[in-house]
Image (tube, rainbow, N blue to C red; front, side, top):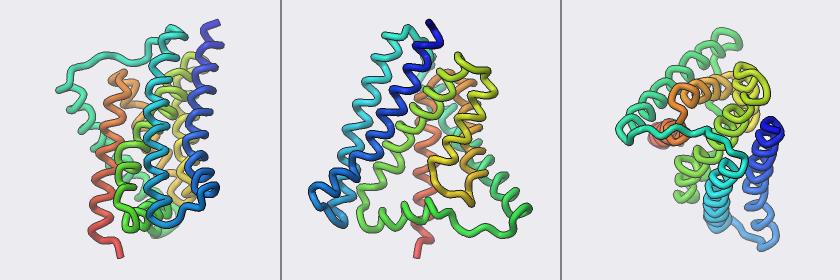
Length: 219
């Protein structure tokens, strides 16, 4: 019975995530939105979807009697969030070096370049990259697939599955190793703290700093 509730939680969160990802494109096509207007509406629709996902996540935890999030102090949340962000950079650098050794000098991440191009057209998209995407991805890949998934399969299997799916979701094959490495770090962080808020902060800081540094050199 417990496994059934856990599986139902994972499936429902995945369905909500897919709807949030698809719905903006549908709205853009239906209402023939273009350029900056289309991007801004994508952010607005995603914001509404994220609010619903947060509400549903809490309600489904109560209904399934799942205790996944630990309460920790604001100071510890901030400290672990910053520490997690630093670990993400360490993982990114290590994985990038591995790519260079194995495949030669890598080019810039296609995913990052695409985001930077969009941000230049519509600055509101920064909210998506720094706030909305980290919240969604942590609820889906860390809390649901890893946190709930380890109640169905062994924790190592859940962690590897979460990291691989997180990497594939970014649709950047050349940087798959990097994204999978980041996914592993974030799974470990969630295991260490038990707080998905810590993950959201670490992920948001990482995306924000990465985006800011990239914008300074973007041509």
